[in-house]
Image 1 (tube, rainbow, N blue to C red):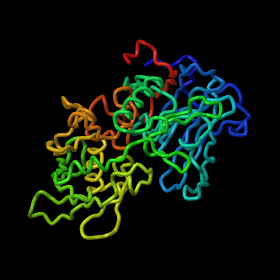
Image 2: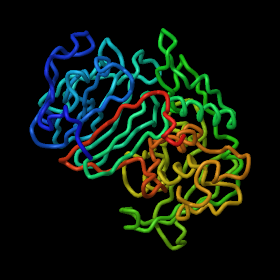
Image 3: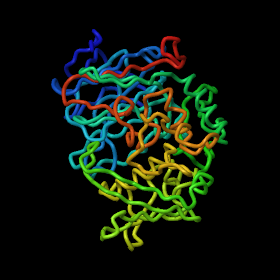
Image 4: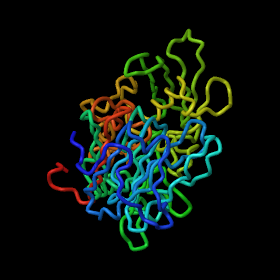
Length: 418
């Protein structure tokens, strides 16, 4: 791809200081990760219709061993700075904000010891009064368009090797898709919309964003789990296939109370079972312990132990749990279906969500289903599971080269095929 002429491709492309608003530093911050002459050139292109002076952005990362993220580049305004070169980065984010009064509040600059990084409250999709969006990346590694928590600003991304993911359809089409999907699933679209004090649109929020101020607009999954009572679910992977570091074959019967005990299909195996406890999958209250299908981070048990385990443990049982909840989110588990995860694929003839369920059974993550046909973004944390090829929302990013983030408008042009 061709770089925009204004990009320097070396260090920070800046001609002046950025806004002196209290929510943005007067002089842009750069760290050892960003601001050098070698590395990945992160470049913005403003096609949003917003004035260049009203597009704010910064880069942050969370180092290994750090409890909080740190500011490694910015905050900038687009008219003054539209690219920065960054070296290796762990758990990074590019945060883009609209407004003439600066960026959302950034984290503190890095401190020598990662464990001492000051506390930072990320901007809340539920209550943040500014309009913002994040792009997640690790250098070298991957970059992805994330809509796990919200949709605020449509952004396309492309790398210098020609790999790209586009938002496809913009805010107006995404709103219409979510409104239609929630109406069919028994949700409440009005509860998913956040607006500013002036009544203007800020963002749509996912099922993960619930608070005392705003109740969930998304349906619960009690009926889904009840429909599977007595069904046998099989979770199966072959080691090395689809880059899986683990091989396993487990099956479990859905009990009337909604719990599931997955045991090895090899009856001679002494491997421990994995138990999905009662009440951990179906809620819409935003609490991770109750929202395994929406949030993908509820507790599970391994063997006879009563100790809660979590997917962050990143072992074989975390992989089994991931496959179970991802299949629920996609709607792949169904009454009378094959219910064998080795057969699940978003590229199957029937596809995920509506296509995977019996007629008129809207039993899947409605947020992810609404985003699926109209964006290239993650709708839930494990949307790369059972999702091969070009439809996978994550793309590889090299340690050098260029990543271009094109900020798009709210109104979808006719040529987008929406």
